[in-house]
Amino acid sequence: MCSHLTDLKTAEDELAILRHRIATVTTWIHNQAYDRPAREALARDLQLPEPTR
Picture 1 (cartoon, rainbow, N blue to C red):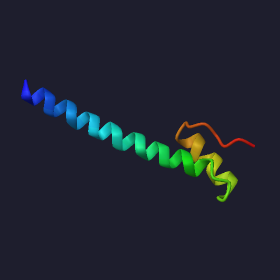
Picture 2 (cartoon, rainbow, N blue to C red):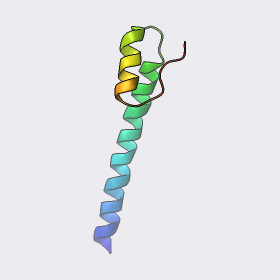
Picture 3 (cartoon, rainbow, N blue to C red):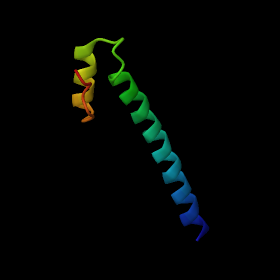
């Protein structure tokens, strides 16, 4: 049983890291200080919402 709890905790930690990375990238994509075509391309490549016009 302990092994399953350890595996679950590891998976939850990895998911938290991925969610943080996606949030960071999404913030960058919507930051108008950066080049718009680059932000649009990154959003498309990662299948995230593109910046609003």
